Length: 264
Image 1 (cartoon, rainbow, N blue to C red):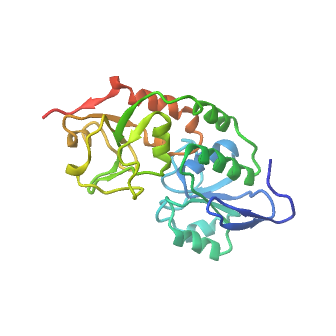
Image 2 (spheres, rainbow, N blue to C red):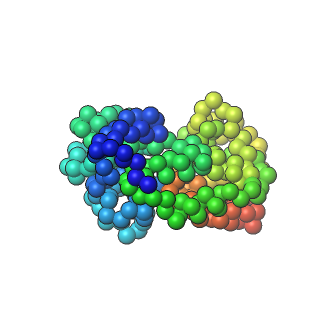
């Protein structure tokens, strides 16, 4: 149910940031691809703007305001939004601050686990005046299943330089819920930058297609003798409608029959 108890309610986002809304917004700009999809699927007509990287749903037809890291604040303001959706990792604090300074409420999300994502999405949709959609209920049900694997993995998310998935990340929790143990889970850095030669031995190297677009010929060749699995970055890192199918998608991509091996 909507969270508006009075004419103007004070709300707090995932970071504890305060914002006031007189009621459910009617003009929303999303600076986060997964949130764009969540709103477009759950509340058609609310979105008036999104980033150039908001690719789902494919039929999305709204004004574009630039990239997630470097959106045009002026382009956002020109759309006269009554709420902007952002994320603590994807969007720069200075852009959030600029929008707030211009009088635009900004709702910032920051889930680091699946359970936090379910709560975060439910709260955000409630602010939009939307009840729990079918896809969110389906996602909760799918991810309630027990782990299926028992593998130690390394998850590069960039190369030149190499950056790998560390601990306390949403994608890391997704993998853990499947039974995969991240070799960098205990790293003090959320996204360590090891030299290639220092990346430890593991059972499987998991290579998502975003943010770096690893492919069968760009990535596995760096890990000669180690099995690699190419996975959908959207299903690994997005928290939105894709979560309802993410478990099945990743399970197929992580299956040993899908592994790639590079030979000397």
